[in-house]
Image (cartoon, rainbow, N blue to C red; front, side):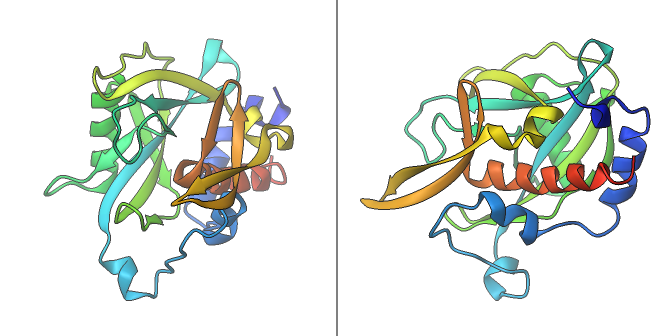
Length: 217
């Protein structure tokens, strides 16, 4: 637990910096797997990606430190089987990214969307392997919820403290094999879970913002 996340100015200051200069790729690339294709916003491929949204849902556990939920997807043999992720999914017709993030969080973890105040967005992250452009939405909950994992989609819900996200000791690398080729993959180690790939890149940008907060509070 650190003094930053216990500060009464934490959410107000975070809201302010979310509308200013975001770290963007500079923050995301810290946790980018080696060999991952890079699609920059000026490239035509970026514009052809399908929009999706995820939610970083901040809440105060026992009225003290700020935390947010992550999910472990069920083992179903699909592309993201068993992986750790933020709640979220693709946009439906007529939805904004904020609407989609709240709807998906309600479906996947039982989060009451009326209890969430959206305070801003992080930089969109392209995921070439699945063809999506993921928009991370940051929201604040009015209270600590009771999690209700969606059967058939979500294996479990667990929460991570902002302090743990900012802790360098929670980071490591390992070698994973994709199409029989070895790649070095950085990950967050939130015991017993390993968070890597797109989710780790999103959380890395969020961590960069939190580190900036330490100079403002």
